[in-house]
Picture 1 (cartoon, rainbow, N blue to C red):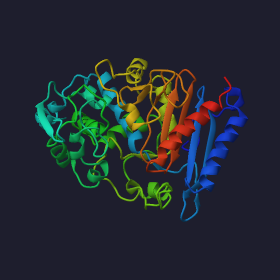
Picture 2 (cartoon, rainbow, N blue to C red; picture 1 turned 60 degrees about the horizontal axis):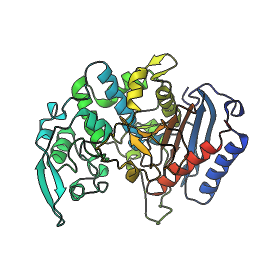
Picture 3 (cartoon, helix red, strand yellow; picture 1 turned 180 degrees about the vertical axis):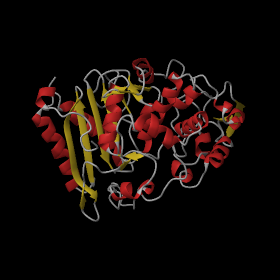
Length: 401
């Protein structure tokens, strides 16, 4: 089941050209031969059928272990979409309203101030004009950021994900970040960061379960995602994809620590791992309006809410600062959402939804084209953005209708 996530179909019968598939294969062959990429797994579904599923290159480039379809990839921020689905499932059960205040579970969030540029290179602090809501965590409008990612002076005070994932417990993490200034007033700007990690801890409070256990019961097991989880088991480590030992852009050493050490928490923003096959099932469920093979995870109306743009008038949209090729995209509840046919440097239809992972994993779904694409690579650093852009161009270039 893990290797073949959906019923297979003939690519040509589903509007995918043989020449387009050959161009995708040639692209990965060039990148691997040039030692810019160790390997990849790619799965393409169209009209509910698996039309392309292939492993390229090496899972372990040093030992020369070939890439296989059951390779386990660090999902990084693609974890966020799964946690968002879990939160929305609680929402539609009446257990987690979007207008809920985060300080109802963690009171220290109510005391955070907002750090604004004082025009002289320093900060001026202001009280929150309204509380941080669950809605803000889902659409990244909480004012919570990652160190090195935000645009204002307050962002420079924040830690990176790698600083907390192997050090902090839940109480320590909440204490650490609630002592910092928010980068924006809640609800006023998209600011990518630890929002989904906080959301995961709220889910634990609401359910009384560890996040991974809750996701296993509510999402992963119903969808047959048997290779997905937060635990770095011996089996996952043995099948884990490894990066090139040195960054091909600058020659610096590189590693993916989550495939070497167990994280302290089930970090909802970054710490899950899994196969491309598993994630394709998850993506197809969303594409189908919340159901796959009889397993109903969300209602169609909840998926429609999730994949609508939630950055309305008056909300600063900086999605393209995080994903440079995504001009013309807004953000929904856990996913970026295409709002315009133009502007972006990649083809796609209005309504396409997507998010990717910092180590090189890729996901996008286009309901109009009935297309779901998942790719696993281990290409940390800036080079991952090249593969995000080029893969989307190649896949749409292979369509014949």
